[in-house]
Image (cartoon, rainbow, N blue to C red):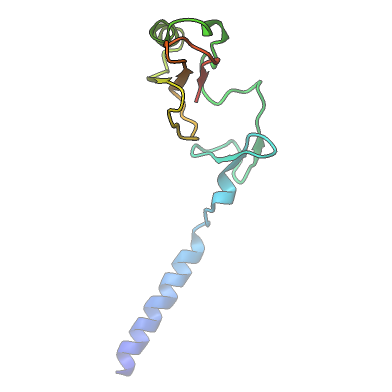
Length: 128
């Protein structure tokens, strides 16, 4: 019985030693501060590890055009075509009618176009 206990104990010690060799990764290490109230997790590595980075409008999260204020007042499907033509990274253009629920997540390659019941764009479409 003593031999089995010693083997189990040695396995536990070996596991703890191996585990201590790996650098722990916590969500705090991946925090990207967008504003005073908004923080998101960044899933791609930054230049320096454990770096918290402040973002402003001069450095967009996604490549290409980010917003289309000129589309306010246009038909929804016309706006959709223009957005996809002007930024090829956009893979999804969501037409959002009033009272339609949306998620709060940010997705590069997605643009939400808020329209009224006549499918006229009523708010500036933005990446995210």
